[in-house]
Amino acid sequence: MKALITSGGRGTRLRPITHTNNKHLIPIANKPMLFYALEAVVEAGIKEVGVVVGSDTKQEIIHGLGNGNRWGISIIYIEQDEPRGLAHAVKISESFIGKDSFIFYLGDNMVVGGVKRFIKEFETYKPNCQLVLARVKNPQRFGVPELRDGKIISIEEKPANPKSPYAVTGLYIYDSTIFEAVNNICPSARGELEISDAHQYLLDKGLVVRCSEITGWWKDTGEPEDLLEANRLVLDRAFELEHQKIEGEANGSDIAGKVIIGKGTKISNSIVRGPVIIGENTFIKDSYIGPYTSIHHTCEICNSEVEYSILMEYCKIINVDIRIERSLLGRGASIVRCTGRPRSHRFLIGDQSKVEVV
Image 1: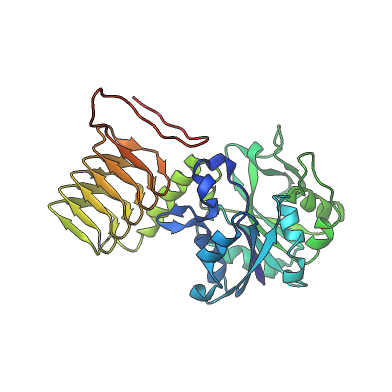
Image 2: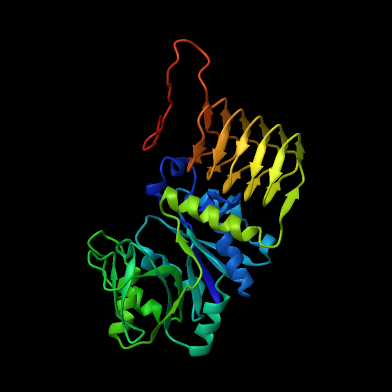
């Protein structure tokens, strides 16, 4: 069993963060999102991993992951020159996969409990394809299966009128027959080779397409709110075995709940209510850090309040007199109170940014 993980795509729904960051490297609980996919396949015993990269962010991904030594695996990189669809990502990986079975894992998906259970089911029942489903509120955003007596009879990509409340998640397990499918389907109206069309091809050919349902939580982190929710869920799970881990200093501060504080971080005269993770060499003074907040390395927060948010490296929040919540701050972002006269709001905002003021 091999693994194929995607890390391309432009992440347009996460702009402006993704103007300068590959979305798969956005930190969830201070760890790049893509690491969770790698850890899941490693935990399932997989040693050979192919990572599909886009031309524009290839070097960023290679720098972040390296050759796989830190996980005890071998990583090779497969370049996709343009976003041509998920089935195209499978198609260009045929020489890496060969005749082996493999799990195809979309690197911007988060799933609790890993993938070992699904791989074991695939190896037990030996279908040609196993799809992992999740019940969702908005199936029209995803590939949607039509089910009859618990079996998939058809699949439609992003349907206006979904035939079930299920989404096909970003976890797929295949044998080598998938390559016949991806090599025989045609591009969709949007010019991409759709993975749902490949699955429908298998069904039309009478091949065995099996399904499993995720019983925990799953997130496709395509929207900013999805990132915040994934961050919340990971923080909840991360502290199941550990209540507090304070490696920095927390002088004169009220630290309560599940909290991790990294080395070199200094917190003074502040309140921290977990679950919260704070990285290394961060400075927090006279502030409130509320639940479900991730603050990365080398940030500075003074006389401000933050809750249910993600702050990437080198962020600054200084003397802000309203609570910041449900917010995602990119690397090096600053929110500071104006000290001059006349008092006014001043913004330096990139393409597709969003700012709410009160």
